[in-house]
Length: 91
Image 1 (tube, helix red, strand yellow):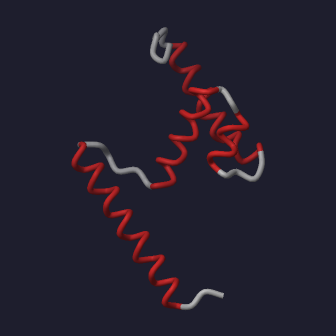
Image 2 (cartoon, rainbow, N blue to C red):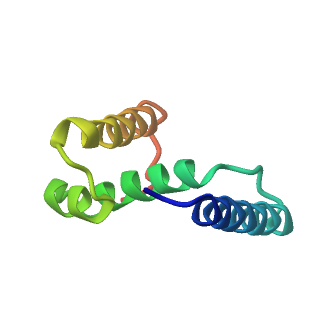
């Protein structure tokens, strides 16, 4: 069981890294996204770039394909939208 000191350190570290992330987004003129949103974006693009479901599951540390299918679904929806607009982005 974790002590209150260990828990408070974890909270402080999370707050510090979150503040750094917010600052970086602000400096780049980008609307702030959470760490989880950034992770989701990375997982989506990793799958999109490699097409390797096993690799992206491993990299993200997912316990099952079911969890990972959220990322796959996002990528497939993005590709449908791009094709519907007749874009050449990503090719």
